[in-house]
Amino acid sequence: MSLKILVTGYPRGATRWAYRVLKNVGCNVGFCSVFTKDSSNQSTYKAVAEASHDIEVSWFGAPFTRHPTLQNVKIVRLERHPLLVARSLSWLGAFSPAHNTYMAQWYQVMSRHACKLDGEYSHCPEEASLYFASEWAEKILMLSKYEDTCVKAEDGERSLLDACGESVSKLTGSVPPCNVSGCSVSNAGLGSSDSEVVSNMRRLLAARRYSERLEK
Image (tube, rainbow, N blue to C red; front, side):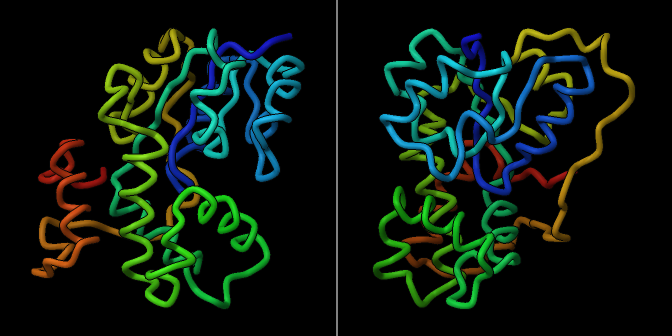
């Protein structure tokens, strides 16, 4: 079997919720199995060709969306409010020197594609979280460039299923969010700072139409 759809996004970006939605309607879907923390350009050829399911949901797949073997695979870019992504990762200790083994594995992947995490933001967890969310959106997911492939988790199950070409009529009830950290956002959430990371986050929020939007 060869992979048909890749749903990817941010770490802590509602990918597990997306997997549960697709599973709920009976899709042949896997979670972080074709694309894992160990994925590489070379391993991706075999992993995609030998996928045991039609749909893969994995944030680890985001850096590989332009890989040659995904040429005929439909890409769905799942968005979540960038501030919630940043705060959720920070809440888990992803940018702390004392992060646990699980987060250390994530951090290896994240810092490989957002190099300033190990540079100027290595000792600034708050700034690191904002930098990462903006960098991942702009350089890895390339949300603005591939607008027609994007879907917001905040828009619910119907939007995700439509993006994947699946019928919402198969849905057996609402699928609640997973692993919610208790983070929240507000219009004043970034304060009055004019630092580079805050300015970049404000631009991202405006570009992705989150400036006036709160998570449901």
